[in-house]
Amino acid sequence: MGANSLTITDNRTGKEYEVAIEDGTIRAMDLRKIKVSDDDFGLMTYDPAFMNTASCKSRITFIDGDLGILRYRGYPIEQLAEQSTYLEVAYLLLHGELPNEGQLKDWKWDITHHTFLHESIKMVMDGFNYDAHPMGMLIGTIGALSTFYPEAKDIFDEECRKKQIYRLLAKVATIAAFSYRHRKGLPYAYPDNDLSYEGNFLNMMFKTTEVKYEPNPVLERALNVLFILHADHEQNCSTNAMRSIGSAQTDPYSAIAGAAAALYGPLHGGANEAVLRMLREIGSIQRVPEYIKRVKEGEFRLMGFGHRVYKNYDPRATIIKKVAYEVFEVTGKDPMLDIALELERIALEDEYFVKRKLYPNVDFYSGIIYKAMRFPVEMFPVLFAIPRASGWIAQWQEMLLDPEQKIARPRQIYLGADERDYVPMEKREKTSAVSA
Ligand code: ACO
Image (cartoon, rainbow, N blue to C red; front, side, top):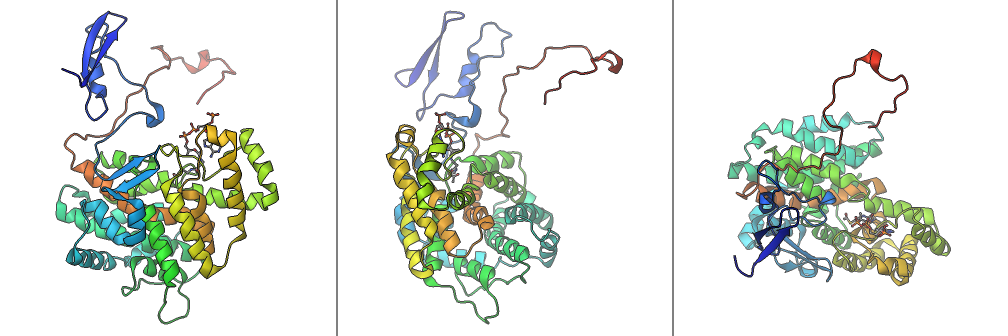
């Protein structure tokens, strides 16, 4: 097999096996031929939480966690954040190339003209309790979209897929804004097709009595940058959920509802909400050292710090920190920024964080910006989900068109009871301990 291979000696049998190395990986299925006997199942790998397992080949997003590099389709995130727009980035993620002028115009038109919701979807949203969490409303309503567009099940039809992509990218912003209005008891503000994607979102969120809502250009641009930074992040928890659900050939609305549910968790997209709550709890710069001490004693984690992949400064956090200052020029500085800066300063010098390579991640500053822009904390994971929809769809589409992919179905190591006979009720112990 040559140099690009691995020779494995099975010490149980003394047999030697040669396994091919391709793109720095070996195929787990190649290990199945390693057996102690003919009726042995063969060797498997054990990798809880996918710490060292590639589940797909992808051409969408590249991350080098040690060097702090993030690129979409080869373009550095810094250049995209500086020069592009979120809708252009969504096109890039989905199509692989930047659009030309005509393609971008058509793309914007198609998405802008799918922003309205069916009146019955609005009624679905009306049914939520007055204090429902907007992320719960988003998850539920996106799932409900599948009942309005049953043709979306035709996932291998390219034209059909395109239509669902326009709808999803457009309607996720409308549903997000409506979830906020519902919770506030405000009338829904309908989409304004004259505005940019981000400008229209601000309009649907904050329009009150004015005839025409005019977004502040600095805040509109800040939201655009935040949306670009959150658009994709290769095989993270929610994207893995999207691919896994999609691998069962589920329609994209149901799959995105599942991906959004994964994003909701405090260890993932819910972290920016958790950061704000943490900063509120700390309350003042003076209390930062005490808080860090409690983190080091293992009482809780420092939210917005650490990342499975980045063992260096998250490049998105660097860009966001800059955007924060631009936003504060308009909104005035939030005192929480000083607490965040002090936390960051102490943590970056502290042996505990240095040793574990724990740096601020994308969520550390995004919450402070969102708060300054008047978004309530409950909206933070929703603000993450809006742009991430483009990454989820790009990854879902890549998975569908990949001939190597099948329904996702991991293996397990069974450690439960061996075969045993059913025990009739009268023979069971009266106070037996039951484990879940
Ligand atoms: N605060 C304090 N200690 C931490 C933190 C933290 N935020 N994150 C990790 N550690 C410590 C762990 O306790 C562990 O220490 P140990 O070796 O002494 O046991 C070590 O660092 C490694 O931690 P793991 O849990 O193995 O790291 P993992 O890669 O599984 O976790 C995660 C990554 C979930 C992001 C974690 O760093 C965390 O919980 N961070 C806080 C939540 C957060 O900010 N999430 C947002 C992630 S970015 C995103 O989803 C957009």
